[in-house]
Length: 412
Ligand code: ADP
Image (cartoon, rainbow, N blue to C red; front, side, top):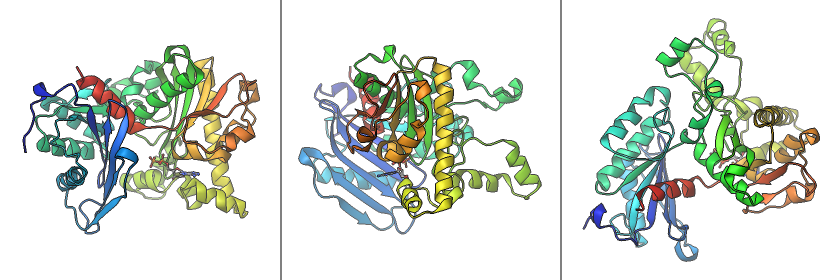
């Protein structure tokens, strides 16, 4: 394998491989930033188990059939090598001189990383230092980075942080009202997550409205399995709903979102639960799944249509929390130009959008039922022309955003 030196990378090198490493999974996408086209995508899941699975989908030139491999893939190194083989089989090998960089999603960048950053040994050490504040996420991201660096040591690798977009939050929004020394000693503050999505979607919304990002104030509702809201003023995040960890804020698929912190002492003292058990309860067994047993909004709507009261209550709690955040962020922003829905639920669930906006006419918010019912993968308005505030649906694209930020850093 000839490994091209970065210095020699021809101006034609426009491909970026985006890696999103989870604790037992690796998602990847190869994009060509010269025309923003997608060349391939894939997912390796259950890494380390006997039943690992890789699904690779060629996307270049209209795409091709997905290919699947099953059988044990012992670690992230083997996972990335298997992905590289699949890419090579499509003529898109990682040794190609057209590959300009690898962009890594990194969940927690703390206060140090406010921008996408070229990964050096020192940067990697800093990301490791953040493990105590992101024990569930950063270790997997670090493994992905190490693996990719070992495979292509010569290639620029860039970390794009979920927290970065939120580092513009004013101190009064980022600080919890707890003892300052204790907070600082343990780096306890509100960091926010899903930043890549909030950045991308708020910018796209400005474009949809025909304005520059600097000229609009937007409330972004990223409603996936994880869910978060943000208030973006003139392109800068001023508030977001997730905090020290992705547990705070909206009701999510399996996470409680906002809760009185005293619930945790109560569970310890009265129910005898350990910190780890409470962690699992609030992160994995709460939210929609805790309320009604399902976390998929499609299934919840189906049950509601059949008259299921628990599903209906779960839906109402979910929507009520969303409404509170829309109201709060309207107050934070003062002037709102658009409320935008994105991610799995936000892009697909017309009933959630309708219910979240219902009754907010006083805030200038109205949804047009016909526009809301349209199914489309394009950014679109769902508010009537006369509405004072636009309501929009803008599909998120975290991979494109990571690739774009990565390429912008290495394309010189
Ligand atoms: P993740 O946080 O895992 O990236 P996604 O943004 O892919 O999540 O969102 C996944 C969620 O989107 C599902 O759990 C489901 O609740 C919801 N969803 C996906 N498709 C639909 C649909 N057609 N209608 C309603 N909800 C949907």
